[in-house]
Length: 193
Image (tube, rainbow, N blue to C red; front, side, top):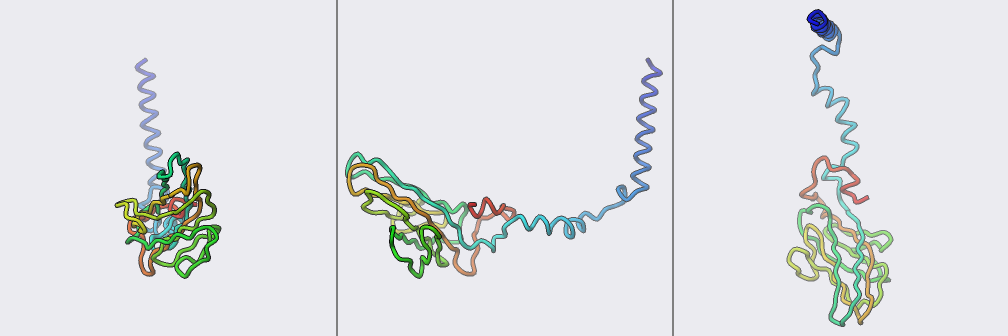
């Protein structure tokens, strides 16, 4: 039994020595400049998969506000979240279904766009809707958006089912970048795709 143990120990020591000699005699064991490898070979490939903060200009999404109004005073809400904080609050605009585009909101419900510094909410379809008001989700102040997003307040015209569906776009002002995007945030998470 002792002979078997000694043979195993001797075999392990010989194997470790052989691995050590191979490592020392080959490039794998040589001193490697990892900074050089990162900068030349790895970093260019990694940077192509990530969005830089300065590359983010317009964010798009959709909203769907609806409710079953049992009384005339009932109302419903939905929220718009940019996914991160913009440098400052945006000027909001609501374009009802069928409205013409404006200089601040040159897009449509199918292709939502916003001029720099603006949040544009495009309604694509609605039913039993009296009004839609954009408000800040941080203070509840109406006709405003915050740097994180906004709320969509649906006021029905009558008792019954009411809804407003659509899209939105927000664009950072020229020369600014979002303030809270991780340097390594993947494109899919930032762009909302």
